[in-house]
Image (cartoon, rainbow, N blue to C red):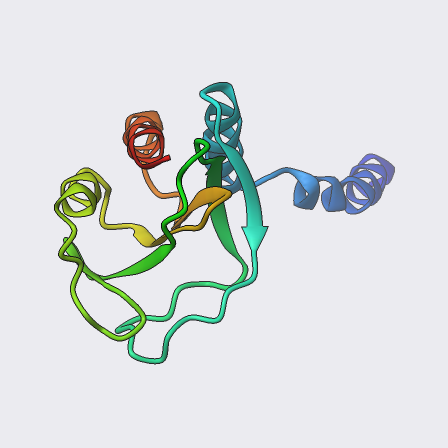
Length: 145
């Protein structure tokens, strides 16, 4: 009887340690983030105010993968993926720039938004996929930077 009492008390004491172990989803996210750093992408959780017209509101804060732009790039734009392969700007106009359309076609449907300004290009993503998807994202960011 005392053995069971001691085992129960030890289990009760050690059970909160199991809560500290990351879930499978969290482990996958961390491995993607580390892989992203290895291939030259920076990542942060960025708060976002999403447009009301999106069919499904993405999370806020959302994982943002970004990269510095090359000197001489002064164009600014922002596009949201409304449905897989359909990209709209803030006025709900479709993307008509052939260079952007070609680059956006390589992105997975789990990318919410891509934006650029004079300093950096950023991509908001759900972090669903494997390292091949991350490599596609890095290729698009490199091409558009």
